[in-house]
Image (cartoon, rainbow, N blue to C red; front, side, top):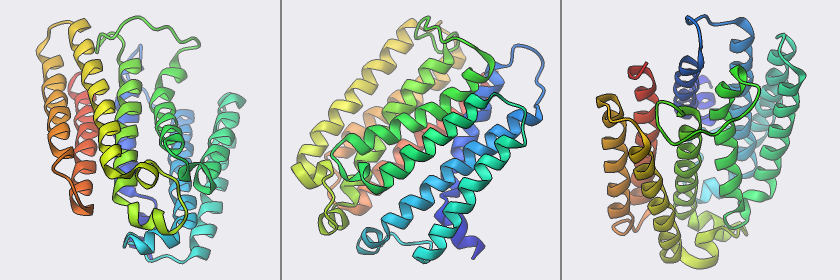
Length: 284
């Protein structure tokens, strides 16, 4: 049961999200590092909200996942529902137990609503669902900045000087690519369950073209960040593997033709997140 539960909430993805979150938290501390209880409670609320999103998505996608042989958790629809409600409840308990601004409670409420709407309807619309997930992931990555700053001020694309904005944009673009790849991987199930994703409407060939455009935008953005960043060894440690993985992604797209290939392509994007996550700690 415990193993099935961890699979259902995508424990590896939550671990990756935690890596990014606390890495950015460390970069935003203006004084010596000191973890506060309220920050831990907010983090736990974010994690349980994200886990709730995976659970409600599994609940609505159970039929499609069976067709795509992706129902790896082995949980029933009833258990998904009960676990989802428990995680929603916990996400608010953590916030109510803290002494943070009510604005955070409102943000979590809005996120829960959007996640539910996404799982019910938006994920079945071409590109809309992909953009929604990308936006939600970007919000989570930007929260460490909001904790320490009242106002948002965009300065430049210098990696170290404006790390929050750079990582938010990276997160949005990388997540958008991964969501489109997942739709290509899940084409069979989406066809039989009435979804209208990009691959369903236009086919995987057209989806690859759109994906290539997004990856090219990522490459241009990364190049711009490199140009505006101070030339330091630590910056090269970030840019060299990221640019290499982006170029490799373009190469792999047109070699991919089945679920196994798309899964490998999706894993490449996870590696990008992992590189970014570890870099946050070694660059302190």
